[in-house]
Length: 489
Picture 1: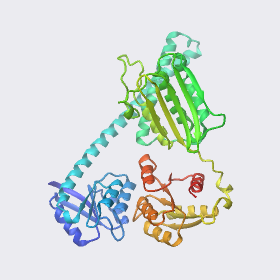
Picture 2: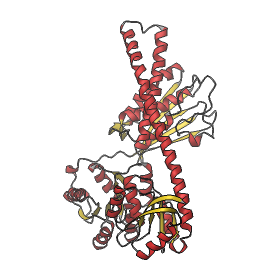
Picture 3: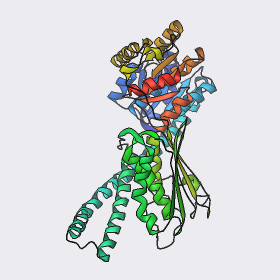
Picture 4: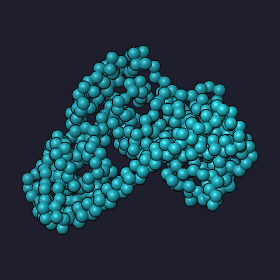
């Protein structure tokens, strides 16, 4: 039995609360139970004191388990969440567990509650320990990366002075410069992986020609290609291949793949770079006829600090961070990277990027581009945001309807029959995922677009699984929104 436990109970039945309290008395000597019945009350309670455990009924008069999970996601907290319901079916329970619930207990079988709570608290403690270890590791990587820059700065300055004085032709100076350049790349990798892990890396997006990206990447990789006397074949279309991305970061991605190909291909080998595009997007392929990758390494080749077997002299160098950084950068661009390889048969890395949007400025878009029946349901609990978005779309010729929570949205949809819906995910009462599922059930032809502050790969997968056709991250790009609406129409 625990000495004390603070529990947030989401329940609207006095009788059921007493049943749960009796079982909880077996769990801890001292219990602090805060009961709430609405999203607002839950938010206030969380701001006052964070509980160690959340117990939630599935459907309340003004709330739901899905809505409670959405509130926790807003706060980005990891608290054991157990559904305690008398009517929930197993399919519904599994659906809620996919949204983040940890387990469920039927009210008719509350004897399980003690065992489930003990297990979930234990697993939560393990997760917290892992997060703490990861945080210390990230802090160490950031610290050592920055600290290594301190001695590098005067070395680089000294080399520049030697160059100005005409000494850079000396063999010894050339060796030092090559090794300093290598050390700088290692430090950059450490800092990049630290930024990515902390979520601090921000892309400076613009419209870029992937042919230019490849040309810049080849320039950066050419010293190693020349040193190892590799033959480089480049195949790019005559017309521009446009992507929405960070010019420097995409160059970094391609340069690393080319350098990797050169590094792990024996001298006088063959490296090929190809750029292509189709209706789905664009692709950059880097292929070599080098050593290849062992099949046991393929599943983890993009994990940080993973390296294949190397000779004892570690002639290839590196920290095992490069491909991990490449994958993270590609993911941030909304793309995907894959590898095909076998020992002795070379490697083929394919970077796929989404179709670039070519929308003209919104003021130039006319009503002629719209269908007479186009109407949009906008659901956002931020009244100003919903109103301004409705005003913008109305000016473009759309018929708009606004709601600020799930139940209101369901009523409006039933009355107005919109063709498209823009749904915020962090909604009160029921979250956008649950609302989207209900809307699709009643309006099968409705096209839905998620609008949310959460934009990582997990959030995008969840919106896709819930039936959303696109996932736009706030603050949304209005040109991108118009293009997405057109594609959905």
